[in-house]
Image (cartoon, rainbow, N blue to C red):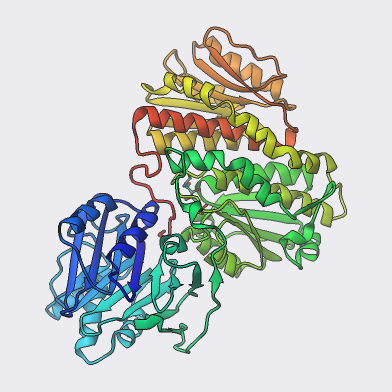
Length: 609
Ligand code: AGP
């Protein structure tokens, strides 16, 4: 949700900022802009509607030379995508601001500023920040002190980058509710919403804490204060993944690359967490054994794709660890009045670790008497990780495609590790056969990905469709939900998912010869039930596309196309059956010519409510 990048360097910053924006484009891509302080002490700006490439075209026509600057790629919240609403927002010739988040009390602030004579040139909430700063600067405050003064009056969430023509070589950043990292170069310093934006210039980062304010100065000088105004030193982290992780390599799209990375990242998430035919409970931290022993039930909270992973975990934890589980989307949970029985463990799932609703749910949960909090997350140093008692990193590496793929499957592996760990810590079965199956999972996934060209052919049947139904039973109902989400997200085909047994309670009315019905059919104890549900579709002339275990005997016939998958341990089938559904959506989207990696209206990291 909006990407920020800023630099104070020993060289022209335009290209650093532009490259940073390209790398942040997954966070928002409806408009982009940049402000650079030139050698005459003037704030010079370009803004462009559309993707970062459009801003690049403007910069090619007229460069913005200068050694300090701020830039932004936008995902619109207040005010439609337009050049006037694009950041940076200026106040006169003096102040420039980029912002990620939402200022909830901006209307009130705007009215006050208008009464004092300020005029507004955008419909955004952000512009109030520029005028507030200008007001303070005119009263004699430095940029740093002015920022410290005004953030106290801002409601909602923000990550800010600000600069002033009065203070050349200074950029100030602030963080409250939206991510912001400081990149440390050689005699240079940077700010960004995500370390990925800065990997071309540094691999050393400081993850700012909530309420932190930072000042970047020439020659890499830094000053950080916490929310109480105390000077603080934050630890410097080295970014673990190489810069190559942020490039497409030989693939046409990031999503395609990320789908095909799944066998290797599945190995990564398992590494060092299994021993022989047993799970290592301590993978969840030194306190895990005691905490899991105390755990009598589990609440799992997440959004979107991560929520679907949580739904699979409910089936696993109940079946293999005998623990009752509640699963809920974070945006609902955070506003309920949940009853928390004694011994409840609170688990959040998030690729980014910065999803606003999930983070708010965690903060709320910490007031409710849970026995402990666990974050399963892909981004080290993210807010969710820092604020949870225990963490398990999913090690999927950077996921750039907006549609989540490898983050989902690694979350599932992590959740299976959780299931096995809770069972073991409670002195129950160790499920050696599942542990053994986990050790060969990566190669079974390779076999599923080898079906790519068959699935590509199948995708042609969807190119002209407007609707699709996905069916699954048991732990594969969430997989059907995830399949439908992927298809709608990147191909814009309206897709719904149902537990197959629900079909006859309503959605069967939609089935006719125009309705593609996609089902996953692993070899499990619900197979015969599922087969009957598929017959109900066939009898109504529906077009069936079935991804089936090679041993279950579902054969292609009129109106049934079957793609056979390798056999896998029943417990791990949800992981395997996810892959063909990802490939199907990918190929349908490519056929339809949509923007696969940056689908319309969406952003990768949802840091606003
Ligand atoms: C899925 O393809 C989406 N990108 C989206 O549903 C995503 O899973 C959701 O916004 C949650 O994000 P998180 O895992 O980073 O918290």
